Length: 81
Length: 263
Image (cartoon, rainbow over all chains, first blue to last red; front, side, top):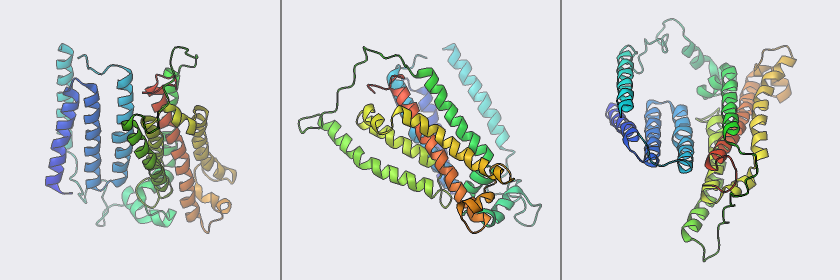
């Protein structure tokens, strides 16, 4: 565990989480959600939980982003609230 | 707008409570924390048992896989069932079985030299990538008890390779390789493989999922190797279910349950 690296990832994590909730364009929100997933994956890999990081990279950042994008393209792209 | 303020308030309060709770956590890597207790001669704990005995019990170097597929195999079996149930729920909600006349079939991709160049470049790049992804996914499944990875990760990667075929070409390309009846069957066969490995020990008066009893059937020397090999079998079952369900969810979501046309 490298503390400066951890703090950097955590700061980016909070930024990504807030932005993905804040943007009106849902496609952009889905992409930022993917970035959030990869940042968490990086954090876990760096803490030594390689299996969990692997799962997060494939399921959290990979496939679920694709599924969200597929859903957005079949519904509406703009957030209403 | 008012709803958003209330929602933000709820998020901030919950976050603050969670952050307050975090201060009670032991430090990262603290040898006296409950999870690590016993490292320096304290009371023996579960994690110490796994660290010291996993290799002796199962001949599996990756402790995470051993805990997941052997010590805690019952839990993992029903995790796989949860994934199958999620796939079935999406199928039940989205799938339109009535034949729709007005959905036009997507135009076939023009692969000639005069075709859409962007699609050709994307299509051929993905065609090169897909076999590599699938071979790596098979490696992740087969090597899951020796290195990070296993059934879930490998299965998701296999499913993602079919999703990549559907995204770069058309959904009918991917469905020609893994059709609807195939992925429904694969999803169920995967569960049956896992449950079958659980039931076989019952026939010789052992506990459910006690893989050691399969030593004779798998022709291994000793119960430990039987556990190791059974874990591989179980991971293959998990990978089949996860792959089929991931692709099924994508196919249903991207076509609103019609399984024709595509994005």
